[in-house]
Amino acid sequence: MSQYDYLIVGAGISSAVFAHEAAKVGKTCLVIDRRPHIAGNIYTKEVEGINVHVYGAHIFHTSIRRVWDYVNQFAEFNNYVNSPVAIYKDELYNLPFNMNTFSKMWGVKTPAEAQAKIDEQRAAEGITDPKNLEEQALSLAGRDIFEKLIKGYTEKQWGRDCKDLPASIIKRLPFRMRFDNNYFNDRWQGIPMGGYTKMVERMFGDSEIRLNTEYRDLIAAEPDIADRIIYCGPIDEFYDFKLGTLGYRSLRFESEILDEVNHQGNAVVNYTEREIPWTRIIEHKHFEYGDQPKTVVTREYPADWKPGDEPYYPINDERNTKLYGEYAELAKSEGKVVFAGRLGGYKYYDMDKAIDAAFDLVESELGVHIE
Image (cartoon, rainbow, N blue to C red; front, side, top):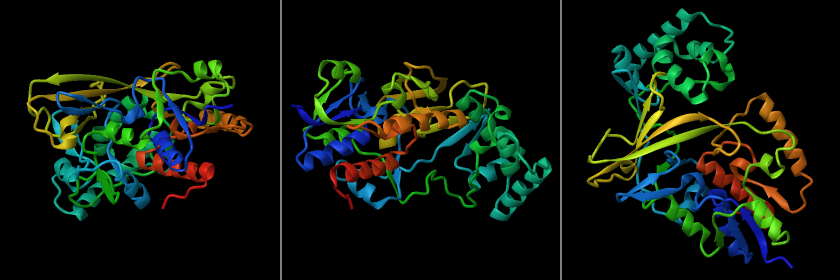
C-alpha cells in the first residue's frame, strides 16, 4: 500500500499551496526537493540580519483578490513599492518609462512635450514593418530610449544582438505619461516581512519534507510511495529528454557583504550598457527598509543554460513551444502524475499567477474551490 496520498516533487510556492490545501482535507503529502532548502527560487536566507533573495529579486504584486487574501494568511506584507532605476554610463533614469525618465532624457516638462519627442524619434526611424527586435523597439520608442535603456540590457539578457532576436519579444512598450516610478500597476504589492522562506514554511505546515532528495532515486527505491504525484520539476527531465531538451536562459549571482549602511540607495539598479556584464545590482536590505550596519549586494548575470544548470526563463520560441507540446501530449497518458508549476508547464509565472494556477490544480485534484 502507498504511504502517502500525494508525492509532491519540488518545494516551491506552487507545491506549498497544494500541500496546504491537501492537508486541510485530510490528505497525506510527502514533499521532496533536490535542493537543500524549501521555497524554490523565492528562497530567502538571513545574512547580517538581512533577508537575502538568493535567486534574484522577487517582489510580490497582484491584482487577484483571492491570491492577495490567501498569502496574507501566512505573512504580513510591508508596503514596499518597486521603483527601479537604470544607469547608462554616467546617466541615471527612472523605470518604467515615465515622465521622470523623459524629463531627464530630453528636458521636457509636460506629457505633451514628451509624446511629441517620442513621436518625432519614431517617425525619424521610418520603420513600418519591423523584422527584428531592434527595429520593433525603434519603431515603438525611437533612438534615444532604445540605445540607452533597451539595447544593451536586452542583449545581455538574451545573449544575442537585438538584430538577431525576433520582433515578437517586444509586443509593446508602455509609456507612463505621469511622474510615477511604481514599476507595477497591480492593486497590491509588497514583501513578506521576515522573508519568503518563513512564509512558505508556514504554508507547508506539518507536511513531511525531504530535502537533498532526487525524484528518480526515491521512485527507484519506493515506486509505490504515493497514490498520486504532483510533479513540479522539468517535464522533459521526467521523460529522460527522450524527445529533446527544452531550452532556458539561466542566471548567475555574485553576492558580497559590504561594510556600508547604504550602498546604492535602492533595492534594484539596472545597468543598461552592454559593456557592463551584469544586468542589475540588488541591495537586499531596501526590500524591508533595513538599517543594519552592513549591507548585502548581489550582481545578477544572465547566462546560457545547459542541462544541470538552474533553469530560470523558458525560451518560448517556435522550436521549444512545439517540443513542449509533444511532451504535454505524452503527459496525458500518465495515470497518476500531474505536471504543475513553472517547470512542469514550461511557462514563466509571476508569483501571483503561479499561486492562481495552483488554485486551479487544487480544484481539479481535491475538488476544493478557493474564493
